[in-house]
Image 1: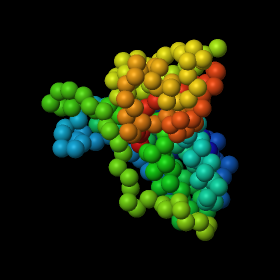
Image 2: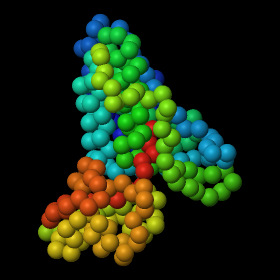
Image 3: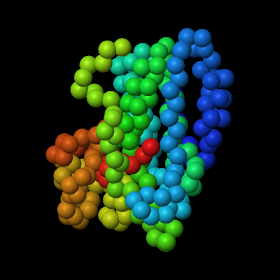
Image 4: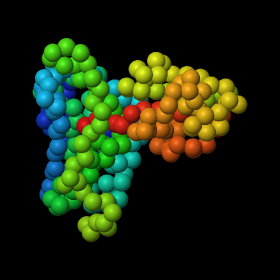
Length: 159
Length: 77
């Protein structure tokens, strides 16, 4: 269940296709559900046009936390495989920022686990976005907005 | 040995440096590391802290050889 930080732009569907054809092929035939989330850079935020973004991270800690949240998801749901790819560096509108994919026997585990991975990534993995505004100037994104529909971890999950 | 201190993102810009090395006898808690490495700047309310790349609370103990990191709320994804 790999996690990967990329410094260069990536095509999420191509990465997914290559991954499924590669090391992931060993679980082929076992899964009935694949949930995929792709986060993409917008050209607007909080009412302003955004022309580019710099994504900074804390090397090593980032990988450690991505691996940790994947392990947590494995303990909560029946997963056959998972993949997280996250960009850092200079990012342009329409570029993929993050790819999360989860494979499981049934859809509930795939949906819930992929959402869990995204929400935990957004609240715990040490990445920071700095936006370059169309009108000039730069600003740090101050916080991620919590998802009101996120999986409630206070409840025991029945898989 | 010593304590390595790191700052990221907006906090790195505010503090004015990304990394500091402190003698291990000048600080034994996260709060003391902050004070020593920021010339007494006030701790932001939403500050996140990690020791050796694991999140800790304010007041956590720091020992010789630790890497202490200070950063704002994370905004990946």
